[in-house]
Image (cartoon, rainbow, N blue to C red; front, side, top):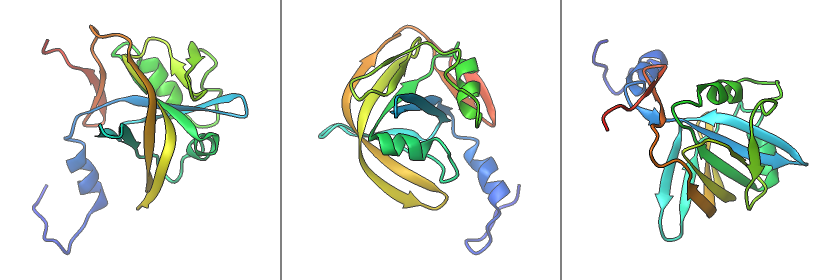
Length: 166
């Protein structure tokens, strides 16, 4: 890959450069008209402690995000290393993503996925357009560290892995 000037931009090269940043894998869930909805997301961050806020960045092309937005509440489920099948199920469009997934309702009604490392249950606080994504800010209403001794599911260079340094 070559160095570029500020005027030149190649989206494929940009994607490849960003693939060098390792992220955790989450599933964003909501309950819309009594039906669970969810999608896999790596663009997630703790935003503020006072007040407690998080941010997640769903794509504008997502068919799940508008339904979660309409619900007004959502849950960030931080996936454990052994939850690859859940990650893959939630990344698909059109299927019944929750058919084989054990979950319970959180305080906002959003699904909390069994076996996740942790969850953060939120009300939608704000939403901002950002290119081909939205930045959704969640006001934290409940959270829990569920499995403190397990490894997270990680995403790096278009592949999944596990942190094994502990």
